[in-house]
Length: 113
Image (cartoon, rainbow, N blue to C red; front, side, top):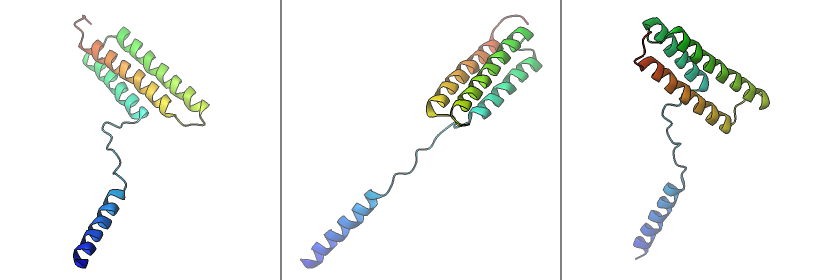
């Protein structure tokens, strides 16, 4: 009887230790930084110009959007001592998503170049 109580106690103790451990950090997919995303989009614009998929007017408009995002990021960093807050990253990613979709649409439209 004492042996079985001791076994149950030992089992309960090891279970408590196992459940008390911290859960592993969630894995982030596509965790590209803001700068990596901006560089990647610049490469997409340049590739569109090289292949003729983007005309000069489309490329100019997309470049202005990219420059605007850069200014916005710079202003955000200036207000927070060189760092981006979570809300800043969300806002910048939203703008980058919209610009990325615009790049795709312009490169894949059926307009003559």
